[in-house]
Each structure stands twice: as C-alpha cells, then as structure tokens.
Length: 409
Image (cartoon, rainbow, N blue to C red):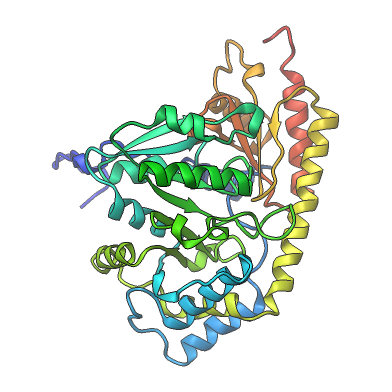
C-alpha cells in the first residue's frame, strides 16, 4: 500500500461527517515543525503546562513499572487512584463527602468528556455549549449523534453565560449543558452564585450538566475555583464532573482523567469504555494516585500556580499599557489570555485566522484563532511558556498590531 494509491475510493462514514481536526493541536504541531526547521518561532499556542511532572509522581510511575504493575487494570480505574481522587475532591470542597465508587478513570479528561457525551446524549438531543468553547466540545456532541447549540457569552461578563441566555437557547429537545470553569479559552471563572443559578435552572428543566473542571486548581483567586461540588447532593443528581491530572500536575502525556457521576452513569460509561479502550494506562494510574495523595506535591502545584499568576500579570499589564483599547478577558484561572482583534480587520485580514496566519508569517508568533472556539473575532494566547518567550512574543505581537495602522483598517 502506498500513500499515493488511487485504486481505492474512500468516503468517510456519516459518523465523521461533522468532524474537524483539533485546531489547537494542529497549530502547536506547525509551530514545532517550523522551530525544528530552524525558524525563529515563539509558540504561545500550547495548552499544556511547560513545567516538569513532579519528581515524586515520576518515581511512583517508575516504581509501578518495576513492580510489574503493567497489566490490564480495572476498567473503572484502580481503587487507590479513585480513592485518592475522591479525598482530594473532598478537601477542595470543604470536606464534603465524595464516594470513590462514583468515579471512573479514563485515558485523559478528554476521553472522560467524550464518554459522558456518548452515554448521555443521542440522536435528536440538543446540548447547550457556552461560546467561546473548547474546540472539542461540539465535535464530541456531534460524534454522539446529538446537536451542539452554541450560546454566546456576554462580552461585558468575561464571555460567560447566564440563566437568561441559556433559557432563550433551550428547547424541548435540550438534554444537556457543557460548562467549563475555569474556562478554556478565556480563563474566566464562574462564581459560586453563578453556578448556583445555573444548577438550579438545569435541575428545574431536567437538563444534564457536564462540568469540565480540569483547571480548577489553577485559580488566581482564593483557594481552588468554585465547583459544582460546592453544592449539596440533591443539586447534583444530573451532573457529571470531569477532572484529571494533566494541568494541575503537568502530566499531559500521562493521559489520566476521570469523571465523578451518579452510579448509573458511571456504569454506562464503564460499559462503553470496556469496548473502546478498557482501563487507562496501569503505571500512569499509580503515578496519578501519588499526585493526589502525596501532600509534598502541593508545594509543586503552589509554585506552578504562582508562576502562572506572575505571567498572567505580565500579559495583562503589557496589553493595558502597550495596547490600550484592545479588548480582552482578564483571566482568573487556567493559563490563557483571550483578546479581540476584529478592530484590526481590513481587506487582507478579515478573520482571527487570517490575523494569526499573518502574525506567524511576519513575526513568528503562534497563537490560536478564535474560529477554533466558535468566534472569529478573538485570539487565544497561552502563557504556559517561559518568561523569555512570553516577553519576546508580546513584543512581536505589539509591533505587529502597531503596524496595522488605522488607515489600513
């Protein structure tokens, strides 16, 4: 078989009719390709921490391999990890009870999200997705044969949505809502009163909520970001909470995520997972168990979040001082900075994609255009990069935007 074979006609199945490759991964790979080819590229597109996985976590993974913990694990995840994750969730939410039997471990939080969508939604269902959204949410809903319904957020409210907007977008076919807080791509964080209102609304309408809280501990307020787990159990009967180790512990490549859900949902997700991937990587689960259970790692997390906070402040100050008038969302969590570029559109630049392409070609800075997140007016910058790269990238961005004069617009 050769790459240029023309003897076989291929038409992808209807399962993939809406599928588009991940724009964030594609841009990150292109930036890395250019760097490898010797180009001077500052990559501010990546959605992963630039810190090493904590040493204690790595040692736990190595020890698991040395002890022969490399066989098929339990489909729902090893008990040590589920129990450790339950304890950590309990501590993050003022000691509220969390049952490890309601947790299912998967090969990354992305798989946890997809499993939940596949278990909850199907043909004829509509799923509300606040926009801008993480690039994979609509694709996951499409793959479950349901219909994603974007709900644009308030520009004056850090692009978050409220109950009024959700209510206007909901129909008799609405079965779900996907919420991300802290948000990718904006860094916005839903407050406790905001979550309270959304949970109450969803309960009244019997709508399932999938709450993606993968960035919960990367929060620039006091303590962890507010969570659905800050509310009593009777408000969580139709809630699936997703989290994992990738962002908090800089373990993106270890591929461990989990969902906390009502027992019937866990059973359905487990049955589906048993035919797709089975249990997640066995040694990686032991490493993740150490991440959640060893208190010494808290210092690593605190140090990382402090560093992200300093970088966040650097980016915000740069835009306020050097690019006055450019609208942006001040991030309260995660490690993304979302800023608006449609004021720079002209005959050549008519979208965020065109803006990013020209910026990469002329100044060597890789950002993610807002089209990936459902809004072509905005651009995402990741400050999960060294201060040196961040400073260089910000200078280049300012120079580029300064070159787009009022006359050219």
